[in-house]
Length: 110
Image (tube, helix red, strand yellow):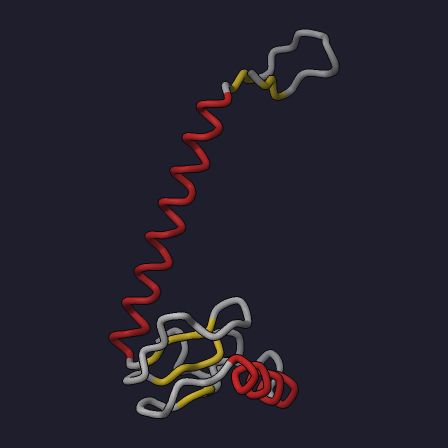
């Protein structure tokens, strides 16, 4: 049992939280984040594109959709083109971000 608000071994009016409560809160937070990610992915799909995440190519590349950089919104691979190798992905990402750092075209977020 962890005590929040206490100092050392002295009792306080802090809130006591058991390990099970902390685990339950973490699971709930994970479920909320997964739901948000799912809604975002669905909205992107309906708009005709997918975004790259964490500077890595997606594992389930949907070749029928444009692949855009999630940070800048610029096109990495057009719909219908062959899947990018990891080296090609990193190079295109580097080129786009060095040329268009911080930009976010209107298409993303529509």
